[in-house]
Amino acid sequence: QVQLVESGGGVVQPGKSVRLSCAASGFTFSSYGMHWVRQAPGKGLEWVAVIWSDGSNKYYADSVKGRLTISRDNSKNTLYLQMNSLRAEDTAVYYCARDSGAPGGYYLDCWGQGTLVTVSS
Amino acid sequence: SYELTQPPSVSVSPGQTARITCSGDALPKQYAYWYQQKPGQAPVLVIYKDNERPSGIPERFSGSSSGTTVTLTISGVQAEDEADYYCQSADSRGTSVVFGGGTKLTVL
Image 1 (cartoon, helix red, strand yellow):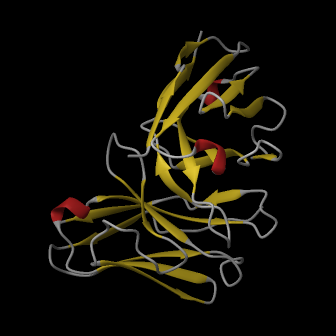
Image 2 (image 1 turned 135 degrees about the vertical axis):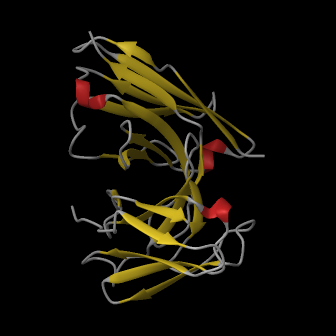
């Protein structure tokens, strides 16, 4: 079955960096676009970024442009999120999710369980 | 970017019908999707392309669209349906995804 497992979260100091990983299994990873979505404590879902199946295109929410970078390694079936210059407002559970690949617009048909990033001194 | 607006909360008694709305200017042109999220869990897709139901989602979940508003309907609500529900859409250029603010469904 499809499985997405995030890792790399923890407590990080403001201004520092961290890289999140998402290990995929149970499907042909290289055939699907992938997303990162975050959820601050007690808040709603916020889309962060998407990367196409071959990595050729990447798009970001305005709130993270220039600080967060999405990437993937199809040989390792792994999605990444490099997070730089972290701020308190980046504190959230970060979910990786698979894009359905269906025409008509992005939607996320499978989600990981998330990894918590806490930005605090 | 554009916004999707949901009511913060909806309450229904077991067995009744719950309707959760989502409004946005782009919805006449873009599909809407719905996710269910229970406390401490990841979101789960319950409706795609306005009114399609993924396999494994109970038939009591349905979606509809009218103009700038889409609606998630849960017929015969059960206690297990108590959760947060989020609508989602995407821009036509394929460059962004937007979520509504979420609606907390309470089963009285």
